[in-house]
Amino acid sequence: MRHPKQRRNMFRRLFSAWIALSTLGVGMMIFATGARAATQYDVVNMTVNASSIHVIGNSNAFPNFRTGAIDNSYAYAHSHVDGSPFSQGRSSPLDTGPFVQLQAATNPIKPFAQPQYADVRFPPTATAPQEFCFTQLIPFLANLAGAPQQAVGPCQRAVGYAQAFARENYAFAQATEVGDTGEQPQVSSSPTPGPSIPGVPGAPSTGGTSSTPATKPMIKMLPVAFTFKPLSPQLVALNTALTAWRARWLTADDAARFPAHMAATSTPDGADGLSAISETTFDPATGILKLRGDSRVARVSLGSGAIVLHGVHTIITMIDDGTGPKSTMSMSVASAEVGGVPVSIGLDGVSVNGTEVPGVGDAIQQASAGLNTALAQTGWSITAAKPSIVQSVGQKTIDASAVLVKFAPASPAPGVPTIFTYYWIGQVFADQLGTVGVPLGSGGNGNLGGGGTNGTPGSAQFIPGTNGTPGSPGTVGQGSSNVGGLQQLLKTKPLYLLLLYFLWQSIIIGTGASLWWLRMGGKPA
Picture 1 (cartoon, one colour):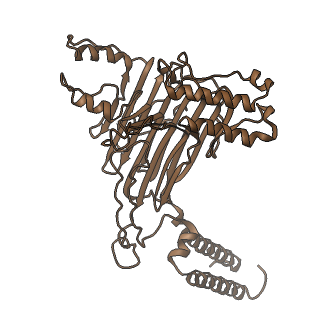
Picture 2 (cartoon, one colour; picture 1 turned 180 degrees about the horizontal axis):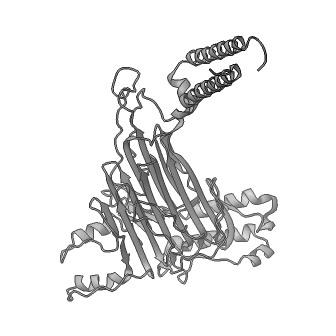
Picture 3 (cartoon, one colour; picture 1 turned 180 degrees about the vertical axis):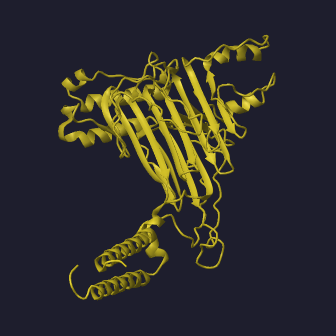
């Protein structure tokens, strides 16, 4: 027979164990729901297009082209992932528009597909990235002219490089004018962090992204130039207008500090240091959608040297874990000059940099207005492009460019076709759609999944320079959402039931304590 003290000790241990198990049950009920399962999607559709310089040119003499007979991108990177499943990576250092594509497809001697693209699609399964180098063009052009087929040597990242890769739920593309971005696609499904593209010199980061490291870029400089000889009447008029503006607003010291750089045949239009990167990822294990687009130009010269931009950079990232797309965006221009005078670029046009050109003093607004007028009189416009952002349930679409330069001179005579050219510099288009699926039987109206409907995917073909045709998001039913812990418990069960449970626990604990004291005869142990 056990001693009364031993029985009391055993009773205390059992009572303590019972309290611990009750408390543990409450904790498990509240917090076990916080173990968040991977988000399940009914619809997944992501597209990223990055273009260092996107040129759209057309005339009212050619109304049949949707955006323009000239619709080229230098350099160009396209990535796409959807839930079909289908993935595509496509890139080119010299993406041509519909006019050149039409000429290639209808070539009277031998129709051909343009070779300057790296294009990989899933399905089928790819094991390695596809590459293109400009060195591959020589054998291609020779064969097109009728020469025997020549062997193509190994691709080197020297001049005009493109790389693309695609596998299930992942796509990557990059293109550079010359050099190497240092990035590689995630060939395996187990992602490994890769190096980020080096910074453009002097290009500050804005818009909530981390600062760009001030390191020398790996992207080398190789001018992509277009020469006009002699100068067109429009460029002669531009020189005249800028010369008059300098004489009106610049002091002798400012004019000496910033010599005139006018349009000249020795400084043709062109750019160097171009790179574009796009990447889209869907991880079914975690239910996370990610995309990014990065577009950079080290230097752009337009108007035969009268307009110069340095360090243009646009980057967009987007992520969605089932709660809706969240994005970061940065657009920046390190510096710019018009006619040799430092300017800043805003939504309303250019403004004289008063810090570097102190002679304008309090007349800086009038001087800036005069400079914009001088440009407009000759058909030029330079503005910061306002990004287009459209967001709805489960979807976000962003079309952003750092700078938009327009050249649309007036018709020289009645009946003569007019022309226009748009330069979207540092352009990134990103569209992310993820319609969250609803588990069976979790709906509140008796339907499977609560009556949600699937969305529709966006346009299969992106038209650069436009907002694209984004997919339409589905309607979310009344099923459970991806929230956890006490928030989910209170959402799915009335609060009074939880309070009654705690009251019941308090009564049980009080009853147990009373029995304990009664068992001990009302004396301390």
